Structure formats: structure tokens, C-alpha cells
Length: 248
Ligand code: MN
Image (cartoon, rainbow, N blue to C red; front, side, top):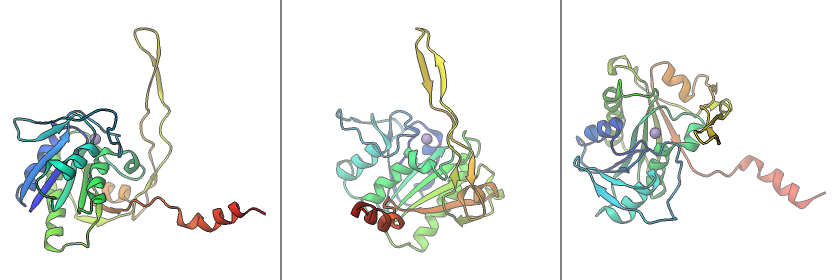
């Protein structure tokens, strides 16, 4: 089996190494990851300049571009053959609810999904590498389950892993995305030249976080597995807009 591994935290991130390590038990792993941290890059492609691919001592390929660039380049030219799965992560920090819109971790997996490859995005719900190897153990459990009992392809599974020792994780639950409150206000400051600068504020706290959501499952000590889709069409609003366009 061929496995493509990517992330958005960059090719030096501990979560990437942990994920690549556990995936190597399943087959031939190729890592193609961004040179720098691109958290929050969403599905952006770099179209304004050419990209370079270099190889680190670890054997990982790194690209001076976004997570989506990495998987796109891998699937459309760098790899000799299409991978059987794409895995992204393990991200330092959760990607739940509205986070999935901005996440580069989810985007890297989504690029695989767009090309018809079964894809998984893995995120550790708290920042920091404290339990990253436990999280990698559970990531491997999810992939192992897929290999034992394949799901119809393509699919995109967004997996959030509790920051707990592996024995304290209760198992895996299917979930839907919850929702957050609006983001915290932008943080305004002055740079040394006296110019006003802005830092994007923190994500909002969970608002829709009841049973059945990703927020709820991980808070209870479960691995959260949410199948995602891409079609943004608001099907329920089609009749209303059709009527609105036709006028009175
Ligand atoms: Mn990240």
C-alpha cells in the first residue's frame, strides 16, 4: 500500500513525524509537507510563483508552499503512482466545527479526496506534543479499521484525537461538526515604527457542542470521526432563491 502523508504545521512538526512513523507499518510512506507552518491556509494554491521540492535528511519532501500545494504536487507529478490513502496531520490543535473551513490540515486531506483518494485528517485537540504518540496510536487504529473493512471511496474523514494517554481514550465515535461562537476580536497593537498592526484573534468557544458533535465526543474522551463533503450548495434555499429571482 502507498501512503501519502502531509500536514500544515510544516515538515519539522512532531505530529507529522509521529503520523509517518505509525503509517509505515501499513506500507510505503511518502511525506510531502510545507517548509513552513501554514496553519489556517485552507485550500489555497500558490499560483503567483513557482514552487520547489526539496528533500530533508529525514527523507521527507518539503515544499515552499501551502498544504494543498504539497498534496497537489504529489498527486499530479511528484509521485510515481497514486497513493492508496492520503493522511494529514497530526495537527497541533483541534480542527472541529467551523475550524474545518480554515484548516490547512483538513485542506491537505481534502485535496486527496478531490482526486478520489480515501483521505484522513488527524488533529490533536490540544496544542503541544504531550500525547502525540498516543494520538498517533489512535490514528493508526482508524486507518487499520479502514484496511480491515474498507469504506466506499472516495471519502474524507476528519478525525480529532483527545490529548490523553492511549489507555484513557474510550474508543472512536462518528460525529457531526459542531459550531463555534464568532471569533474573538482582532488584537490591535503598534509596531516599533509606530504603525498599527493586527493579529487575528482566537477562534470562538464552542456554541453547538451537544451530544453527537465533535466537541462533545472529544471532551468525553472519544476519538471523533466526522465524514466531510465539499458541495457548498444550500439545497434547502434553492426554491426560495428561484422564486426571488422570478420576482413578484
Ligand atoms: Mn496546524
